[in-house]
Image (cartoon, rainbow, N blue to C red):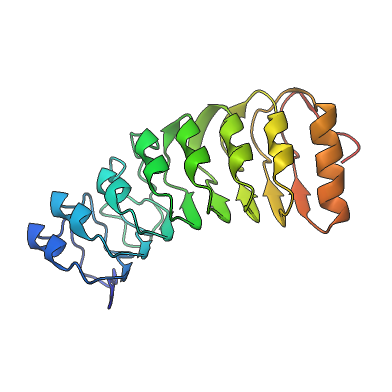
Amino acid sequence: MSIKGSGSGQLFKELPNTFGNLQSLETLYLTDVRLESLPESFANLSNLKKLDLTANSFEKFPDQICSLLNLEDFQWRSNYEPQSMSGSGYLACDDSIPDEIGNLKALKTLNISHASLKGKIPSTIGNLKNLECLILNENWLNNELPASIGNLANLKDLQIHSNYLTGNIPESFANIKDLKTLYLQYNRLQGAVPQAIATWIKELKSNGCRVELYQNSGYNIWGF
């Protein structure tokens, strides 16, 4: 069963708490309806495999998501001001990615982009061993890249560009052998690239991986 919202003139701030009774749902699109929160009962949608919350107006990370243990694909792209019908006004989500995101071990795709999330990327993201696509572009994420991302050996697509990440690329990233896309540009990565990472990047590129590391202040990326 699939439900798809549309923001064509009618906006919804919240869903009824009875929404959690739809426990047979496997696919759910709630896009462009300017939801500001999810009901607590949303955590009861235990059969949900695909969820798209693109273009809503969440002020906090919807923690109910972290209870959906069968979820394979979670998309949340863009977070808008509730009154912005055109999508021109972005809303700062005053929250971070919770540690509990690591509970979603069935995830294959995690795409949270342009949601203005703050803070560090939780190390528990390294628990998502089935993950093939990790996209966290255009947020306000800071601190260092967690070394635990190197546990995600099945990753094909790793994009965390346009944030405020600092430090270096952890050497554990060299464990990810089959990447097709690596986008870490427009951050604040610093220092000389470790030899293990330099070798890894060259191998990725020789295998056809698209690598983008430019516009990182103080980062020695020449030769890539």
